[in-house]
Image (tube, rainbow, N blue to C red; front, top):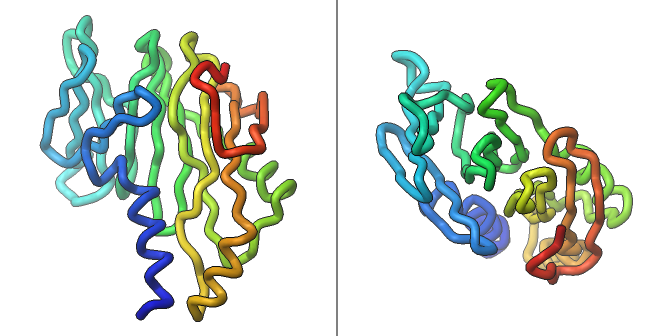
Length: 203
């Protein structure tokens, strides 16, 4: 039982935004919507409901202070955390689509499209850090730059697949808390921060 504890604790940390409904991270308000509930923050509101009569998938909507009606911006199957960009055109999304996997998405409210922006950063992290294969590393977004052109994300541990506490500790030693600045449109890595402390004005 003790061997599973590191996995459980880490998973709760990564998914905290989605579970706590509303949270502050680096002075940004994140919402983890739940079905049929309305969340109002910073002159916009987020709602979530089933896309059909079935339980899944789930459709999420946003209504800014100038919108006449809610706009559907994302469809998912598990749990998400979202925050609206400074210019109110883009939505930053942490999609926890599996118990051990997550992805960072940006939804464009003008075009109705969404794009995954974490792949290059995740690939670069594995190439440069070479974490132990027993670690499940996932990207997690924190905030937009003031002009919404950049996104700050961190590589975090979602889970540890280890048979014993000793194996878990050994695997964790290979983890490095690195951050990445990426282009919010393309996901191109703009900067790799090889430390765990990021200045307030990172952009």
